[in-house]
Amino acid sequence: MKAQQHQVRSPPTRAHIPFLPSWQRFHEFAAPKESSNSGGDAATTPAASQHHPYARQYSHIYAARLAALRDRCVSNAQRTLDVSSSSSENVGSAEVVEQIIEVKEGVWSVLVGTIVKEMDPKRRPLVNSSYGSCDTQSFLFPSVNGSDKEPAQESLRSYLFDSEKGDVLHLEDSSGRVEIAPMEIGDDREEHNFALDPNRVATGVVAAVIGKVSVEKGVMYVHSVHFAGPPVDALKLDRASNKQTSHEPTLLIISGLGCGADSPTDVSSGGSLALRREMLLEYLTQPKIGNGASFCRMIVAGGGVASPNQLESGNGEISNGGKTTKGNSHDDSGKSKSVNASRSSKLAESLRDLDIFFSEVLSSGIPVDYIPGWHDPTNANWPQRPIHSCLLPHSCSFVDLFGRSTNPFEGILSVGDDENANMRVLGSDGLNIADLRRFLAMSSSSKIEQNNNGTNGDSTPVEGTSSMDALHQTFRYGHMAPTGPDSLPTFPSSESDPFVMQTRPGIYFAGNCEKFETRLVDVNGDEVDEANAMAVEGEQPVTRLVCVPRFAESGEVVLVKLNTLECEVVSFCDVRA
Image (tube, rainbow, N blue to C red; front, side):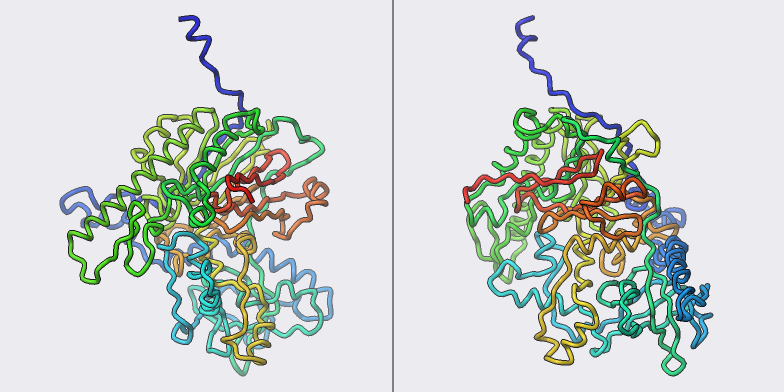
């Protein structure tokens, strides 16, 4: 007996960081207080209908969003007014108007409202893109993996704002709306960073605009636009006091594990996704291979299971176990049931693989938080509920280590003894960023207008924004999902908007991106040079923005050191170059 006990190997000592989940505020809006499946006619009673989420109107969420972000927008606009008051312009004399209906023509004013982009869909090409796409890249650009890149351009042009095609930009509140347009500010580019660009905003963004309403046209020409941004409360890092150690606590963020099937890149290169996951497991559980003892937590940002669309090869062909069968346009019910049963069986197998992988990580002592993603078996509307415990039975047996969170995710890591040294982590599976990217363009409105005037607008190349720029924009907006519910499916809410940034995060991430990107931003949302980050961190809060790539395609995971917010990527490759 003593010999057997001597052979048991204890797990390696891990860096322990106290963690407090705060994603429950999202769950309050995702889970109805009264279930419609309670039996009988209980769901049709007035008491039950009042608690059901779809008993509310979607207009209420815009009103709640505006109320939550209004003061922050006005505060940021006041800074510009203070600077402009010392210049020769009369912008500094602008006064804040409480309601849009009260604005006066020909007078400098500050209006706060929700931006609405009216774009005629009939004038734009039809883009076959849906939420059933296998990843965010194919959702944005349906044929980007093919040889023809033109469908990607059609996808961008279909959402590109162009006033010459009749597109109109409005600012709206509960009292009414006013048309807004960029103001010509001459050669002085100091304020151009705050100028209105219709292709840098989307419907649902709350902003404060400074400008004048034209007497002739009734259009408000905007001098500058100011977003809410996050509140100023975050960890103030001091690299002088937080020196690097051999076991500095490190947060590992991964997305797109894709359990259940190899990725399309593996099919073409001959790689194995299962082998890369095994390499990752060895890296996490064997401290001698990597610095595994420093990993204090692992966050999986969606994409845990493979997409159901990977079973389909198009044209009604269904891939099943390596065999391709041709679907009939006059499908009988028996064949449809067979296909559905095959997909359900494949999903169950994917969940088993995911559950085994998590249980092996958890058995080594690393806490894991799982954020549901695009194709996970949970509700589709945001916020997404945590995945059910019966689907991951082995992982859920680690009660103190495994966390099933909502999408989006939020939590607090205690990186020091001081109460102010709490690291707030905020992020999602990346669907909110992918949806916002459809409405943003890298080119400015002036360049787009010049191109459209000089050549055929439909043939002018359009450059889409990157995932990092879109993530950075949501940080400036002070809102995680500004396109919901107009484009991103969300639950209606009347009390408050759950996606408003109530506190400033220290780490803000998005999963399932095309590539790894990171950026350090200061209290104003401006990018901070990594070389000068030490001087900035001692004076004001900073936030680390991270775009986490899909592991199934890139084989990469992201490591963030909590003491210094230094970020790096580790790649796992099973195919020789």
